[in-house]
Structure formats: structure tokens, C-alpha cells
Image (tube, rainbow, N blue to C red; front, side, top):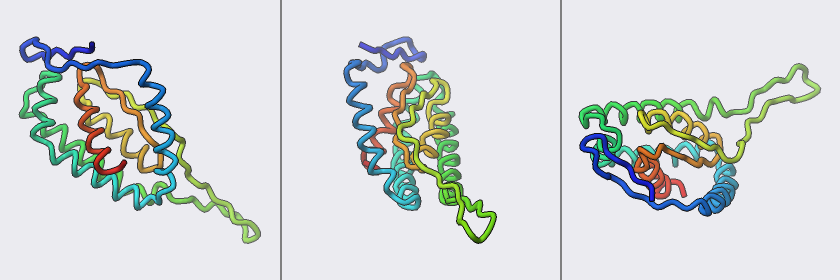
Length: 174
């Protein structure tokens, strides 16, 4: 049993049971999901990711409360992390189409040469406990905009962060 102790009063805040046999199934599910995801055009992925971000941020009060209890940061500071999450996600999504476009490297008229950006597959993201959303967004959004699937592992101190992101992804992307 994984227990998260809140630094606020040293009580158990979250308990989760994890099984290592779920790892293989998570990888298989991620491979399957990525195959369909990479076939969407960038603009479709961006639109779905915008919906994901909006849904996630719509739960700001709950997320702020959970974040404060998990890491012991004053609740008044939670909004800063969520605002930073939005700012970073919005920026990365605004440049995704341009940054993921083919790059023409043709040197003469006899041959068309270009660099085509392709998804890698699965991106494994390990997020820290101290800025769990702010740091995770820096990997999640660009990886998914590029057509990859993401397996996110948050610190044992912040398990609800991954759960909140997963719920919004499940609702808006899956």
C-alpha cells in the first residue's frame, strides 16, 4: 500500500494500492493508443489537447486543494502553478503546427528533399514532487502534440496529480 503523508499535519492523505503487473498492460495500452493518435493531423491533436487543458484547469479549486495537501504549499500559491501550466501549454500548442511541419532542405530543382518529423512512440515522463504540474506540462504537451503517447509517473508524494491529468486526458483525448 502506497501512502502519501501530508506535510500539513503528518496524517495519511492518500492511499493507493499498486501492482507491478499493471506495468506491462500500461505499456501495451500506450502502444495501441499511440498508433491511432499519431495518425491524426497536428491541428486535430492540438485541438484535442486544448480541450484537455481546458478541462484540467476547470477543476482548479479541487486541484489546488489536493496540491496543497500533497506537498504542503500554501493553497494561495496553487493558482500560480495552474496559471503557469496554462501559459506553457497554450504557448506550446500555439507553435505546434509550425514546429512540427516538414522542413524543406531542397538544394536543386531535380530532387525534393525535406525533413519529416515523426512520432517516437511512447514518452515516459517522471514528474517531481515540488512542481508536479508545471514541470510535467513541459514534456506532456510537446510529446503528445508530436503524436506520441505519454506514460506519466509522478512522485509518490503527489499521486493525485497524475490521476487528475489522466481523468482530463481520458475525457478529452481517449
